[in-house]
Each structure stands twice: as C-alpha cells, then as structure tokens.
Amino acid sequence: MRTLFRSFQTYPLRYLFVCVLIICLLTLYPYNFLQRNNVRPEGDGLAFSLPGTAYTIRPHEALSYLYQFTFLLQVTPDEGEEVGRFARIMSSGRNVYDQNFSIGQWRSQLNVQFFNRDSKQFNELTIPDVFRKGKQSWIALTFNGTTVRCYVDGIKKAERRTGPMALTQWDSTYPIIFGTDPSGKQQWEGTIHSAAIFDRAFKAAELRHPDLIFRKYSSIIHYEFGRRAEQFIPSIGSDPDSVFIPAFYMPYNRSTLFDSFRIMGRQRLYIRDIVANVFFFLPIGFFSALALRRTVNGMVFVTILSMCFGMILSVSIESLQIFLPSRFSSLLDVVSNTLGAALGALVTVVIARSISRHEPGRT
Image (cartoon, rainbow, N blue to C red; front, side, top):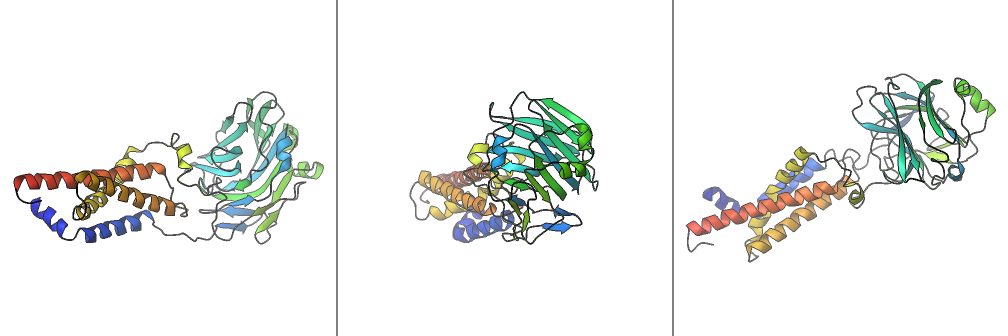
C-alpha cells in the first residue's frame, strides 16, 4: 500500500488528467451536440424518431376560452407493448410543471393529463390496450363541461367526471409540442397523420366518421401532416399558427440544472446510479488531494478544495449534457459526484496520516 501510494505521489497531476479525460469521454458519449432533427414526411403523415421534435411558435389565444373541446389525433405508433417509458405524442406547456395538457403512450396504454387551474392539479386518464405497433388509429378526447371521454376509432374506451369548468382557462402562451416534452425528453416514435382541436364536444356517432366532422365544423387548429412544407406546416383551422420543424435537433425549452431543483423531489432515487456516481469520482478526489498536498497546508483545506474541484467538474459535465439528446442533466448527479470526490480526498488524508505515523520524520 505504501509503495503504491508513493508511486501515485510522484506524478499526481498526470493521473488526475487521465481520470478527468476518461470521465469526460464516458459521460459525454456519443458526443452528438449537433444532430439532425429526426422528423421526416412519410406517406400521409410526419414520422418521429429519436431525437425528433416539432412545435408551434405563436400563442393560441382560443385555448384561454375553451369550456368544451374535442381533440382528434390520427397516429401510427412504431412501438407497442415493448415501450418501457412514457412517451409524449402531443402536449402544451413549457416544462413538467407548467402545462395545459399532455397526451402520451406508455406500453400499449394511452395516458392523458389535463391541468385543472381551480385545484392546481392534473386530471389524469389512463386507457389500456390502445396502441398496436404499426396500426393506424383515430384517438378522440372530448370534454362537455363536466366529463372527459376517450374514443378510439369511434368506440368509447373510458370516461371520467371532473366537474363543471374544471379544465378551462388554459395558458394561451404555451406552445403545442409534438413528439417529445418541452425539454426534448420522453421521445415518442411513430407517425402523426393529423391533429386537431375543436371548441365543442362531439358525440360518439359523430366520432365514428372524423372526415365528416372536418367538413361540417371548423376547428381551432388543424394540422394535416401529409401536406408538408419545408420547415413550417400551417394550420388549416381558424388559428393561423404553424408547426415549426427545426433542421437540427433543438427542443423548445432545454432543461437546466436550475430546473432540476424543482423536480428533485419527484426524481426516483436509483441507488445503483448514486453509488456508481460516487465511485466514479473517487479517483478525482484522491488524485486532486495528492496534488494539493504539495502546495496547501492542512488536510481540511485539501479535502475542501478537492471536493470543490469535483463539484466544478461535475457541474461542467452536467451543463454540457444539457445539449446532448441522449443524456439527462441532473442535480442529483452533481451531489453524488461531489460526495465521491470528497470521499476520495478523505482516503488520501487517511493513508497519508497512517504513513506519517509509522514513519516519524516524514510528512
């Protein structure tokens, strides 16, 4: 142990540089900071794959005055029961807290959330056995002022009573986002053929023939994704806003480390990931403490400075991960990495003191 420790003391900065380089290479893989947005026309729709997103730019004032509504979506998922994550098909919001509604897929289930501004909570509806890989379906969500109902291909699948005016007065400044959540996560893979919002609740008999609805009634927004322009798809409803498709992957609102303060209480604690992050930064604290012992007096200051170096390195890596579609920036990772650097520095302190006790006259 003493021999190995003394060999590390010879060139601590070299070992520290190698550790930093390895950590950066592993945590920033696959280095796709500039990646094409995987949204492309396919048949009569718009196909989404990882990473791919599209969103509106201008506000939708009509969403502020909805007392009844119908959502009509025609989609073909590329995944069915094997989807092991929640994927967003269509939503309106700025982040996980500030939303109007969310329509997504989890396995074969349809998950719908509507924000209730009276109770400041989400009304959630989960409908099983909706999605089949490669199967095209019409999904209709209606609200008549008191009850939310879900229809798939004209057949009622579920309903939930919410109370009068419980889902109205949405924020019109939120964009409508397709394929992901506002931060570009929760990727859905499949094809969206059509998406529309009406300011009325249709009956089951009318929902069996969606084409007749478009001929008979005017919609607030209506996107026919088969009619693809370059980067903008105009609405053929009463709202003239267009869906913007960036050429390179650019989420509407990238999440930052400051955003993770709000969701830290909601994050699931994966003990395996926390332990891995701690051990990952142990060498950083160990070798930084070895290097600092040559110029800094006092083991307490050495430990504090090593911990600060680990924290700065972790914050830098997590900040870069904000721009990687395949990575998720988390404040919890910064905390566990900093703890690992502190433990690594303590290991150096303990070993150094043990050697100095057995060898009087050596420091």
